[in-house]
Image 1: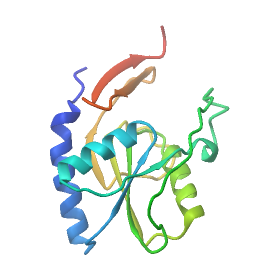
Image 2 (image 1 turned 45 degrees about the vertical axis):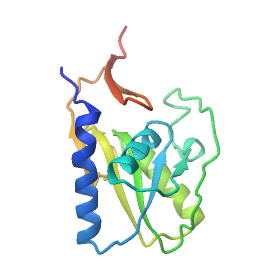
Image 3 (image 1 turned 90 degrees about the horizontal axis):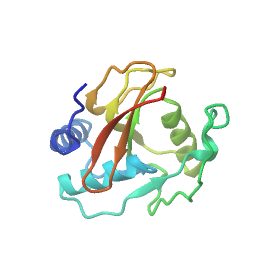
Length: 168
């Protein structure tokens, strides 16, 4: 399987995000990346958009409902939101949308900080393996993987994708 090149996806994603925000009448939005890959994608999008603004980062480890069941043992780092959440337009960015549980956790954490005016979801990849009804507003590409396959994003520069197999 040929994986898409993130460097080719990012310019279109930036244009799509800019157009979507304009259609919604959003003059200013705060970008928030989900650690770690989402932060890398968010940084790249900030560059593509030519924006010089602080980037928020979320570590959703404590908000996940499945990290012990999935064998995830989080290396928790603090979230950093250098702006108000209350009544603000937010762009939540992740690298890979799979089950939707990371995004659910991120939304739970954001709402602990306040009630945003809106949240727009951006994802580099969608693996179309949803367990929750969560879909990206702006998407780089959709991949159909075999159940034993995963995609790993490496970065921060350049961003590269690697196909991995869980059955080794």
